Image (cartoon, rainbow, N blue to C red; front, side, top):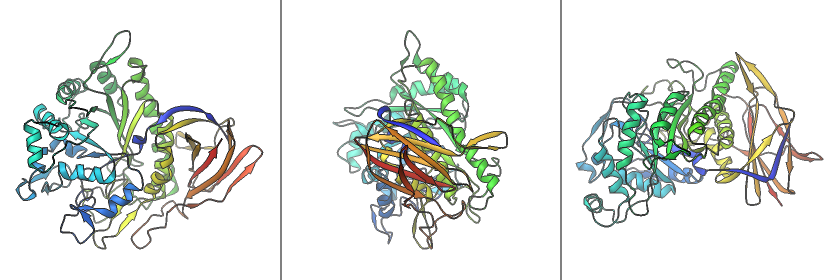
Length: 504
């Protein structure tokens, strides 16, 4: 197949925030993942595990969402400040019904973001919290000068305010965040968003809790109630974006399938479900376009990823799962789709960063080893797309496809971007058994200094462990050749490939 890319015709910018992350008080994501405590024999800074920090810094992690998820709407931030031995405990009723000691709170999270060089994305408590509670949290974090919350922050050891750009107005209000109707939630979002103030130079980007999967009616209700209709759509000052959540589940909600033991049919069903995110983003964007053709309101996919049955012998409420080459390919095609929606999609957050669902990093509680997952490597290989201009990819002869049940799955996926004089092309071959060749017809510039990397393995089920941490890891790819038509890229079966080049 041929892919025509005009490298001198730039499209919408691919925000680095499409490569965002998510950390919830769930299982071993926070405790035993990011946070090991100051008394740990592992290298740490204020209890924050430094090898985890270093691994995420290598991804140029742009933002981190916290404290949830469902946990956000039962979290009361005042319980997580001050001396640790004086912080009250709570029960995490959503995830494992375990006791939470609140040793990881606001100051620890902000310290983590500073170490990562990431923008904080805080999800406020709408479900069980109050407007004043959320307003006070914004003031505590971002206000300078003198005020009750500023004095409290300083008493807890932080003189200067933090920069907190992203603020979630609750989470999954249609479910664990309050079981509201769209109309009920929209009224709450208007109220809470009004009192989440901009203090000084800190400008909040307020994200309303949006739809579950294909609930386009929810999106339409929010667009109607959170802005002013007229000759042009005027977004209200209390919200700047809407979210949506979508997980790739190949089985049923009750039996999602095994993370490492699966057949080829299971694999193809997974890819069909993963590719469906294009349909969903298109649907929500179309609804938003009807009211906001100027695209002033952002769309945020702040929970996405694969969801399997938990690993045998682990707490079912901790959502710990392994991560195979299959998961990496799910991530690869998600990013291709995200790039195509860069005009409306402003942020995406994979669920979750450490030890939960489709994690970047797994930490072993016995050996204390840190394992980088295949999904981690896709994030790392795609770093060059951060804040780059998207490039349109045309396929004159189409792309190979196969029928999976009643669906048609395109088995070769391509996206491209340009930043300064460098072009990055990402390619996925989803076919489980057959290789593919793609000719990149790069027009509008001379191409030099071509470099390519590949992520694949002997089997779709292959994954990394403390004993075999590099079973699925990127390596140089030498099967890229120059032809009269462009660059011919050979894609082995079930592989993810990046091609980078200079253009002039």
